[in-house]
Length: 301
Image (tube, rainbow, N blue to C red):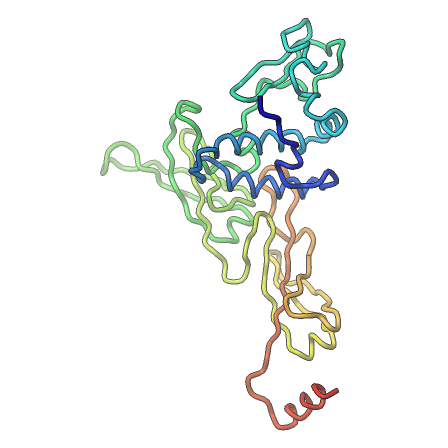
């Protein structure tokens, strides 16, 4: 039997990683290895492994148990599941390559259930809860629904919006049904929202100024050579409007200034990402004789 990899190694994070670092690592790897996107022969197993690691490390109690006992805490016969069989208070069952734990009224003599009172471990369900959908699942996993696509602006995706749409019904030419749908704040391209008897896939138009990475936004901000050297208080755009920031004297091109909590709202968990302001330098193309003289003096010290 193959040795199970360390969960921290699976996600590529250290034991001291913060909750946000674990989430970011999971987001990157889950998107990379989702079987709908990655056609490698081992993509399905990698995806399940990544989700199994995240299911434990994203939960403070499970993470603490794992840090203390390792994989033995969740293994059959490890003292946490009735020696690998159903007992008077619960046990473990197998679903694909994963063992999940359940309780039926109280903890066994060997200790508590690390996974709590759960009915199963579904890596695709974890993925959908974290990302808001956007990928298919195996046939028969859910009732068939009609799927449509809607394109919205960047600001609508960030702040949420209500749209009136017309859905075709029956054969071509037989009319449509009008629906009013509410799109929550924080959705992104590929987000999939379930309504009554249909699903809507979101497409977000890019913004001219803001770039999105997960729930963080990035913006380029240009300053002059003098402002970079001397420092300046600048009005910088955010998705909530301009805010004043202090750019320190001697700031170098490429410097990132973090504006905490000025990013995209999290669809599922609340809270917001951050905004990163990337400083670029405006180099003048035409200089007066005096300006050239001053720069030459500066260059020669």
